[in-house]
Image (cartoon, rainbow, N blue to C red; front, side, top):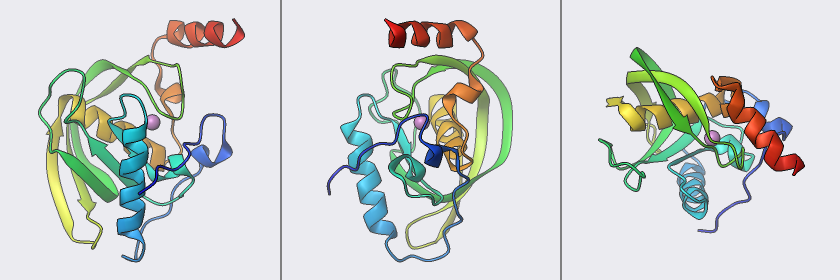
Length: 167
Ligand code: NI
């Protein structure tokens, strides 16, 4: 499966609310394309369908190769993911394939419980915490048209990026 081009900020499609998925048709193909695209990006631990211009609620998360080892569920494709419960807060550094050159400090919930479906629309609920929970929250944000830049807690991160882009 070939990787798809990744949309980058300020592409308007990244700001759309993605549609709920109600049919299985084409889901395996979209999943495989998302995986290939995520793996083509440097340090990609997750990607959401809107990042390749597919405005539907699917994300892929894979923390097996995270820079700092963390508890994880392996390679996960989540259809219609929804955070059911969330607790705790933690600051951490994040990047995004759609916002190149920005690494920023973002506050996320430490522990989450997520309900989602697989590509044949079976429903699951899992608990996640730490870095994997952070990645899931980041990817689910994409489904609402929310980007890393909206969550930045440290203005210096943005100033640093602007400096890079005007240099
Ligand atoms: Ni992202």
